[in-house]
Length: 336
Image (cartoon, rainbow, N blue to C red; front, side):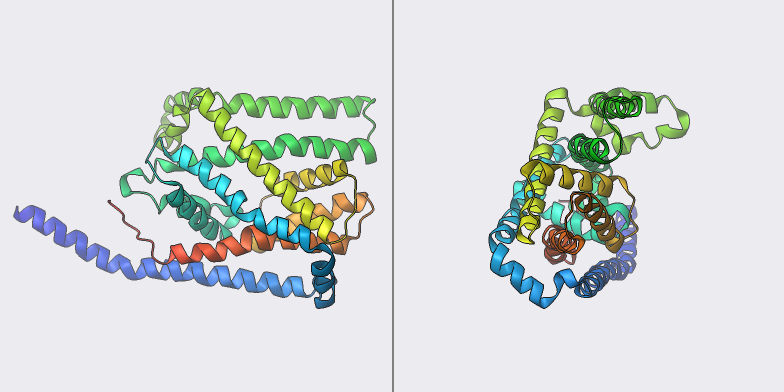
């Protein structure tokens, strides 16, 4: 009994020392989030596309497109919460509200980290202590399914621009590119549905065996469950697509429907595949891609820039700020 009491006191003393560090970490996330938001807004304000006169013009003529993009914001992250609620059931049962909170916290942490790896930490911290390491695999699987939706549609968009502006389809290079796209998507899909084999293989490699528990949960999802996650990812991708198209239309970009789709999908593909250092670098990659592809279609780069920055503000900046509400009350240790 004395041993247990001493152990409890020791753990309490350790936690008392760790508590200031935890709050320091939370304040660091808060500070970095506000810093990146301020830097992004100052950078955006220097562009003619987001001048006060142009913003007034956009609101007066394209308010319907902007309103649609804003109204789709909760649908976008609601679908991500639905996906996380489904994926986390292998580890811990959570309600939709808890899943939505986890998504917002992950978004806020991801906002200030390279390639949004903080999304893992944010979602993990909303779970019970014993389940936290097991959640890494579920989060990775969700992101992988979303990436597959981006690659699948983005490959078609990239092919459109390649065949229209660079190489003819009826040529050795054009045929090779088409085959490469088909093989890439087929390989990615087959890998997704055979992760349980990959997990078993990792267990047989001594050096990698100790890391298997982080992704072991991936092998527990059957084909039907994976199809469901892919379907939700596809619907969420469609919401992204409609949001960007609506904002492009609001900023005065007028194109046939198929060119909207191919331009946006190719932009999302390059943005997703390119590594980013922080939130500002993440902004730059999407804008450069959008300006390039829609520039090929003869559109004003400043208008495209304004639409792309607006998409970032609606989908990333705004929910990241909302996520701060849940970051500060987070407990590092939760044993419910």
